[in-house]
Image (cartoon, rainbow, N blue to C red; front, side, top):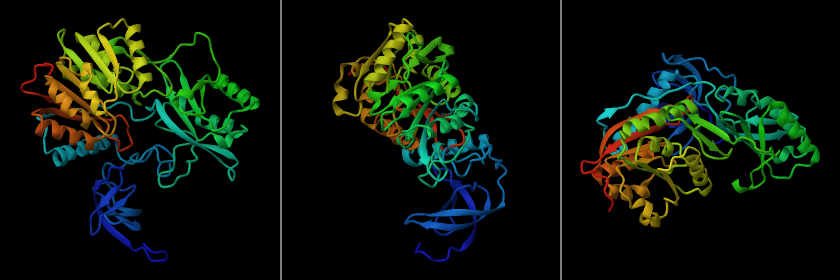
Length: 447
């Protein structure tokens, strides 16, 4: 919209939510309005125009949704970490299930024979992993630590975070104060938070080497708050402990239902919500219906989050992952638990040549896939060739899940037996889901 042109105030009914959690008004050209909920009648103004849709500013809610609640966080609406605190948790979960249903129907053109009950856990204080931004702001005279603002590139000025694990959230204000007094305060743009069962790790991305006074201040912070500080001057290979501690216990988290303690490094991928992860691993094992004859393939296995639990119930479990560091951790975790029936291979599954790897040409009765957001399209012909009796697809993006499920059903003869969602990220529109597929001719035979 040209500068100076008047923005008319409009009234409209909100009919749905976008993938980002904005309310959608479809009277005339669609407009996305942050803060508005389905079923509400609102007054709004269009603040930015695009070819397919406009962005709107919420002015007033004339008729409220019954699911509208008061956000628990004072920073909601400015901080970009959450988008749905104004929507009741049960309604958030329903919206995510609707998103999955819509994608399966519209993209995959398939409906599961059964819908799984959603998996949910705590809605506050659940995040054990986070990437915080840091920025020295001269006008404020301090380093801001937090998430980016929702509509701006600035770091939100927050004192705590309601969705971070309480011990991690309590570090935001002290971190801000400590970083403000460093000589390299303008050279620390990011902080990775990893909360293990036995410690909290903070990885500081440093664009300049800290001086002796900086190191002294950081070590004092580390001791006072009982955290483990790491410095990352370059890539992941450059991460190093600020203070080396002989015989220090590695970071770890538990899967108590399977008597597992998984060790990990502070920059390794682990699921952010520990309770939901435990429930998800248990459901995966339950849905696959393993027995002592089962041979399981776990693609994109990471540090073995699913593989080791599967190995507890199956004859053998094979994990495949592209990251050598994660594979090393997975093998170490298997050795710690004497799981000789768990094997791991480092293989880039995005490369066409991966399909010819020996580990992908064995006989598998079951396959589990947990790919990144882009999905597992390149692996689908290989998985189909294996003809597993059961295939469990776990996804962090309903669009790529639906695309891949559609191909497995229509191109490779699988049947979508069940699907469902899990609320790994309450108060966001991030949809995690799973789909259980079966093949009528599935015998687990190698090609």
